[in-house]
Image (cartoon, rainbow, N blue to C red; front, side):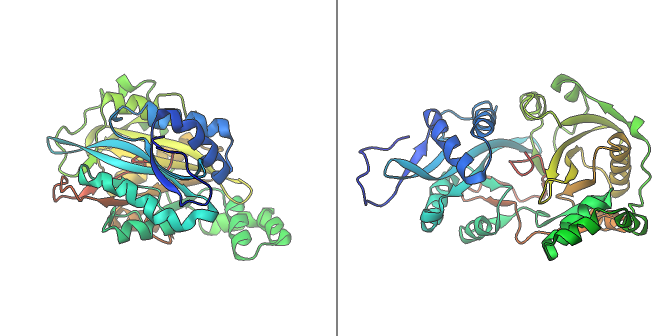
Length: 361
């Protein structure tokens, strides 16, 4: 850390820029705040920050809050390239924003340290909670379109009903009822009305080189991630996440193969819900093709998942999928935000997907 003189006892906390030698302290602090194992956080930071192909060595890896030489807050930086038409634009993402309980009053000022990077490059974040969303809004940021909720498609109802019972009225009896065979009746009454066949339309890709062979649009009209070889290799084929699946899907509209990326995550108060998250679909496809993609994925992952999670879909796709049995889950605030003080971003629509930033990593 660039700390300057040692901090004396009783002095106000100090804001510092974080560099590679500081990641050990950052991992220790984040592990304590998040409840995750220190080794897991260490490995994540090494991959997410140091191996990121968009990393710029002159830029800080994040910002920290020091009190008596102890890290009590941090916000990390995760750059990512986007593209619109022929222009390639670097955006600086935010990640792992934590402030110790005893220093929460400094959270806004710590966020301001990150915001100052916005004078040189646009900023974005995709994992904001309610408090962070308020800071983004106060800074003049705008929500990333369609980041205010998610579509939840239930395949197996018992673990989901158990979660609903726990949240509404935590009770061992209700949880046992939700896990009982009677809970399966709900699945019969509220099924996903999707043809869960056609898994042969999905071709598993083994390496990033196969992925870049898929013909993608060279000049997208909407601002979207730069899906080049270094990004795809780092994001999906680094071996960091054994649940990642990258597929070529034979689409009918457009009539060609497109990229489909997924991962699996555990949810629920006792980690009882296995979800399949659709991370990316590119190029964009119409609503009826989303139905085919979801059906093929459910067929492929049959017996291993309880629900399918979709994010960043517009109203037309939300409407079609909800008509087929998906449920809209509203967030307390948008989780995606962008701030363009540098005025680098053109006036155009976004094609943002859950793989962007750190939302579903």
